[in-house]
Image (tube, rainbow, N blue to C red):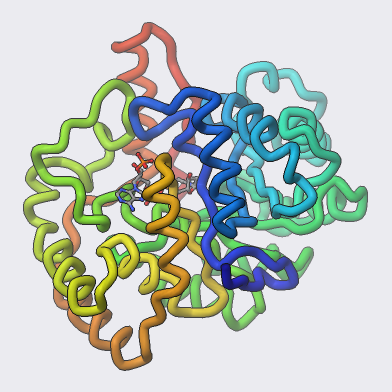
Amino acid sequence: MKTRKLRDLEVSAIGMGCMGFSTAYGQTPTEAESIRLMRKAHEMGCTFYDTAEIYATYRNEELVGKALKPIRNEIILCSKFSPVALPGQENIEGGKLSLNGVRTAVEESLRRLQTDHLDLYYAHRVPQEIDAEEMALWFGTLIKEGKILGWGVSEATAEQISKANAVTPLTAVQSEYSMMARQWENNVIPLCHELGIGFVAYSPMAGGLLSGKYTSQTEYKGDDIRRVISRYKPENVISNQPIIDFVKLYARNKQCTPAQISLAWVMKNEHIVPIPGMRSEQRIAENLGAAEIVLSDEEYAALTKELDKLKVYGERTDEQIAELGELRTKLYGGSGVHFKKQT
Ligand SMILES: NC(=O)c1ccc[n+]([C@@H]2O[C@H](COP(=O)([O-])OP(=O)(O)OC[C@H]3O[C@@H](n4cnc5c(N)ncnc54)[C@H](OP(=O)(O)O)[C@@H]3O)[C@@H](O)[C@H]2O)c1
């Protein structure tokens, strides 16, 4: 497997997003199967794993910790600090948004992940009430303490990134990026390149749509996030069909799959590393195989020119995902913790 550098952190060119093993995309595999698949990805060359304390409220970190313990020294492990207090964190001294709050959260993540340090620890969102510089100081302290080796921010603006990076150099920015979500393409992505910051693309396949295997008839059950994200509304899936058809056509010409073309396009720039979610051996092989699909400058330009002409219908926002709380209450009588819209 080829590798890439996120600043000075060497990772496999494609990583594994582990969220779906515990939440977000409908029925999850059994614990044993999830553990097997995470280890199988490593056998196939993956060394870069992503989780967060908020995924299934701690359960995903526990699962990832169990799965990766035997190979901990061979992989790069990342987690994320939630800016909202999760259950059990309401009474942290100083509040969750404080140096003590971040330190307490990372210590708990380390315990759940069965490790003594994280290679990369992100602020899952930069909260409006805190200056990016102040947050950078907290994470810089965790680096000095050896709890984390590097830090990152997720869904941050170019201004927040510049300010934070000036205080404690960022290893990576993790934000949504795919052929159907190009909002960071003209500002944050070039800025990261200029500042030597890696860019980790989450939902690089628009939650599966770009694989061409989902249609307007696909039913999402239970608390699958695709029930609240507007991109999956049947009318938007139909309106977005020209993008899927185009990707399928391009894949046929290049003799690979649509999933592989969509990942190869995302990772055209060397500082970008996608972290698809994938829960079958076949999909892991398919997605990791995308590292071998190289688009020439001409192919990339031609693809991008076509994409520029196609309007994208629907999106994925924190506000939409916050609606899951209501859906869960309706389904299970409980609730979940989600981010509020930041900007
Ligand atoms: N920072 C943030 O705010 C944030 C937000 C969201 C996600 N993330 C991270 O990013 C990771 C990836 O995000 P994501 O899961 O939304 O990414 P994604 O890869 O765009 O979407 C995952 C979905 O696509 C399907 N899929 C993947 N490969 C496929 C293939 N070859 N053919 C058909 N379907 C395929 C998966 O199916 P199966 O799983 O059923 O195989 C799953 O339903 C997460 O696991 C999480 O670690 C971060």
